[in-house]
Image 1 (cartoon, helix red, strand yellow):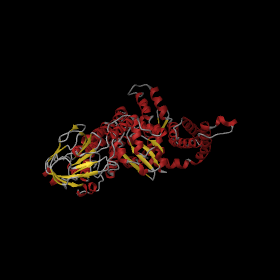
Image 2 (image 1 turned 135 degrees about the vertical axis):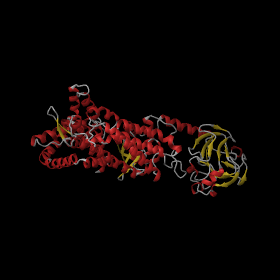
Image 3 (image 1 turned 90 degrees about the horizontal axis):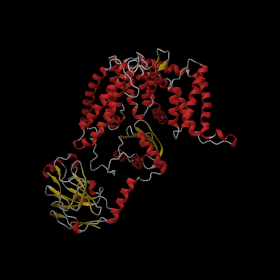
Image 4 (image 1 turned 30 degrees about the vertical axis):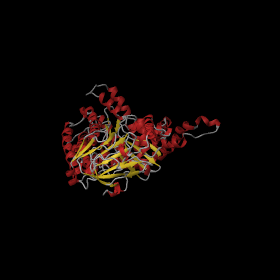
Length: 640
């Protein structure tokens, strides 16, 4: 049932995407704007036929291939349903429910009958052509049933709507809290559809009856806009301030990594009102923060109602809609004052909770911790959706592991064959803002507002078997070439001691992960000197942000990790000074890192420094020397 409701919520996104155009036309044609009545009428042509638009959009969303035949069936279905009901009882008005029901049934019938075959003399009506026919027949039956029975759910809905619309502060507050709490499961679209497009009626000056909070507000209903106004302070000010709090609470060495992302999603929320990228950045990392966010949203709705503020939007509560509908709003400047106050509240509350409870919001995770498994990174940022699709598919376990793939505003919605095959860390390393597991097979991956392009690229790759794109093929060929050129051997003179100190086997390192060789084979040094030098000729491939570890690569492709001290990642770079940078060529004896050994000894469990060979396959490591050894000494270790 949850999956079914989520499919409805996902499918609603397509018709809802038409609303900004309708809102723009309605506003531009009004007297206080361009004063062109036919433009307003054109916009109302969309808002007045929402049930038809919803039927078309939902039918396409439910159809397995988004076919236009399903869309036509949805349109036919809602016309038959509404026409039949009106003939039985003209007092019944199903509103957008008629479109939702017709769209769902048309989409499901399309999936069942789009390839049906008939005898030769009826073959013209087979396949996709049969879908509108069977849909109309089903809708005739439903129109008869609803014509007599819908009076009961209509009474219940009207009673609910009247309570919500007339409950004052309590009604708007409850709606605001539930609106945010339903986001994790993707059902907020369903609830919004009822409030925005169905609850409440208003008769315009021309005698037209319009329904729903958005439609009524745009057409001048003096009682509409209370269920929309309170979102502006949250989306334009509160959530961007939460981003600022997460940035301020981030670890120093991670601020640069998360700053750009937080600025981007904060600006998106401010301008457009798209908030899911922000909310998913802390929703699962700290449910407490999200509960606070939901309660603050409800509080904003209540305060806006008490201040008699009416404002509305055609898409969401961002600066664009705020500016567009400013002229027909009531007390809109008070929303700016509210926004400043809520921004301060969000910043203080979020920063306090994050720092006091050590919540792992962006920039505070332990991604550099030695105990965190490494994921092979792509090595470069790319806007190529085909390359991203390839990497996402690999992290999802391949095309064969995906039973179905859909998407909504910001997230991929998937049904998995084996969800345990999904590599969540890899998905996040490729740009996903979060991963959400639902039920036993369902998975949602939060991507952002570019999700549509990524989803379509993934679908295309699933059809083609997900062969590696050219950029990855070139990398693989390069790696293969490097492997063929050398077998990662190290002779006695190829490796020199990087520091003076006591050499010990890896098994004696007082850390289980290193001692058991989980990171790879190697040895360790208990260093005497403050400067670590390069033990090989090659290049620097990685300098950890916390400066406690350096990755090297020899000319024949051997990868070496020099990890100074144990649990030193927690020092966040204090006591360390790097003397090289990633990509730099090095020779034996070149200084790599300067360490304040006394400081590190006082702050970390040990300064014992493991030296690990991370990409060996069949080669064996032989440690020839142990005990006290001097810097630059050869013959300590060989690899064959």
